[in-house]
Amino acid sequence: MSYRRCGRSGLLLPAISLGLWHNFGAVDSYDHARAILLRAFDLGITHIDLANNYGPPPGSAEETFGRILREELRSHRDELLLSTKAGYRMWPGPYGEWGSRKYLVASIDQSLRRMGVDYVDIFYHHRPDPDTPMEETMGALDFIVRSGRALYAGISSYSPDETRAAVAILRQLGTPCLIHQPVYNMFNRWIEPGLLQVLEAEAVGCIVFSPLAQGLLSNRYLEGIPQNSRAAKPHGFLRPEEITPEKRRAVQELYTLALARGQTMAQMALSWVLRHAAVTSALVGASSIEQIQENARAPAAAPFTPQELEAIDRITGQTARDHGG
Image (cartoon, rainbow, N blue to C red):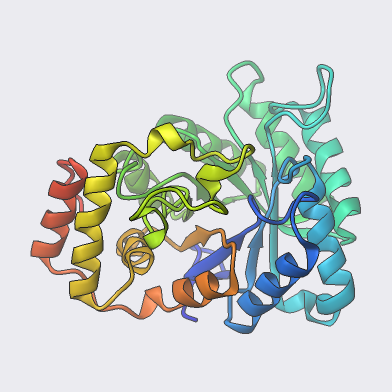
């Protein structure tokens, strides 16, 4: 596994990180989750990403991870980079979501208990809050770091302007913003070029989630919707109606291009997001050991040619020409 410096910090992230958004909840097999996580660690995927509401039910992914850590990885805690988040609805009532100081501090304390750790390495605000002053939200992140509950602060899904404001407030408070976590893949390019330019200018790291578009940019949906896929699960975020004939045709063309590059489609999709110098890591989920092993090989691929990048733009119906470097 290759590692990349996160912004202008001393922290290195693996090019591929493991997210526990799916397949690690109480509804999933513990033994299967354990096998995936241990194999990922063996491959050098040292960064494990969670959130307070991951499951289902909410909180259960942190509990699953906490058990694996306690039973298998406790002696390796200092080799692991753990992150969690808060911002989406976690419990009923007025204090169970968004960005108030009360919610964020209560949430990190709950997350630490569920995982059985004294601190996490990165704590994110999971989404912008339109009603809470950003000074309060960033002040809560600053307090969480200064109190030892987290080592670094991050934000997720903030627009370029919101990112500039958050970074400025955190810098003034003395707790720099380490990293931003946005969605980014061949079909969803909203971070080009505005957000990536802000992150580069501010020396903030970037870890992209859903680089495989919830599995759509893999071999899984070439022939339809497999029974055990995300699109087939009632609690999945990829819905069957999103896999349109047009998307299927695009995926087939991308598959042909990946084969010509000597990659699987998932590997090509990961290599594509990692081509940007501003992207520190690609955050992947996994439903099998085989997927982890496949994805871990993506950073070693050959660079894209201009012709390949233009073909990807054409296939996905994009006009972006900010191909990074």
